[in-house]
Length: 430
Image 1: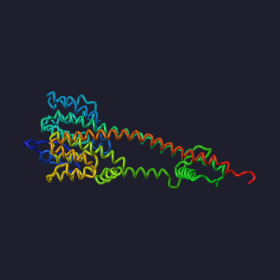
Image 2 (image 1 turned 180 degrees about the vertical axis):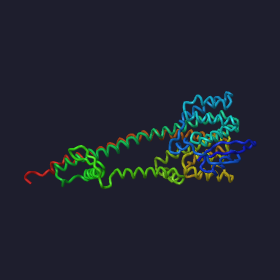
Image 3 (image 1 turned 90 degrees about the horizontal axis):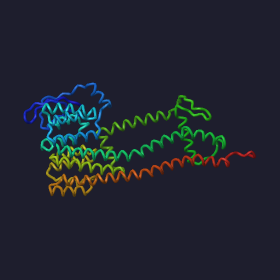
Image 4 (image 1 turned 135 degrees about the horizontal axis):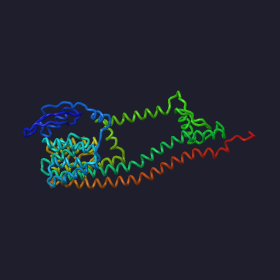
């Protein structure tokens, strides 16, 4: 939900702007964290563009465009170019129309006296909470150029991990889809003709192997319960069947899948889905390693930027992408607030390995938490890469075996009865 607000800053300036939040209370909490006292908050009237965004036409900025922008802004600020002029120049130079539009709006906000973090916070789909928090810390500490360099590297690393996971998943998904389509194609187009040949040669009471009978029965069910019936020797003749058909089943499955996707977008649904992922043997390892590497890298970056431990834990929890681990970090934040060191609640975690707690303890004792966590992040990012490459190499032969078994079963179900037809065809003497 988008809101329009008017507020006063810590130094007495009056500012106004727009922000996105779940509700008015969430926006109040966000503004108070930024040391901004709201005077007026009201819901922004929906424009045609905002309505289009709500029905799924929301535009996005590619990670590569964001990385290029971040690095270029860091270079320009390091060279002493004023922030507003840097943003304006980068907006003109951007190849992404949406990013250009955002940067033009951010430039106007900065020229009107707003901070860069406040301006970026209006676009949470482009600039994440971690991104905004680090920019805010960089502005307050006077090290914005260094923070921007660190951010660019972090965005690149995150995108690299996402690409590896997507590429590893693409092959089995394609093979699975092709296999399912080929199977139903055989059931609908080929098996009815083979069944007709077997019946005409061996008679309707021919005894077939159980696997052949199962495939033939399933093929008969498919052809009897679709809106197209296949008549041997003729082209497919479309007729409407009065009995429940497979099309209805597929529609029900699609609706069920849509409702499932909608459910896992809710807080309760996300938690249950993420909890379920952490129980699947191989998936659990990948999810945990990705979450730990993301936690370590994000937390280290925030600590190095000067963000407090409690704020860093809150931001990191929402950036990990797993609600179960996020809940554990919230519990850890409460214990830290009570005076405990972070390594203590992390050591009790069911999902963080002991090495993370031990390394954190070393970092707390030496005062180098950010450096220690960066090393943990490097280690787990490398582990994720090795694991994904290994899974990708393992999945290929498994899918080949699966395909071979499916083809072999179908071939055996078809060729077996045909090979035995001579024994089942009634002789003239009978």
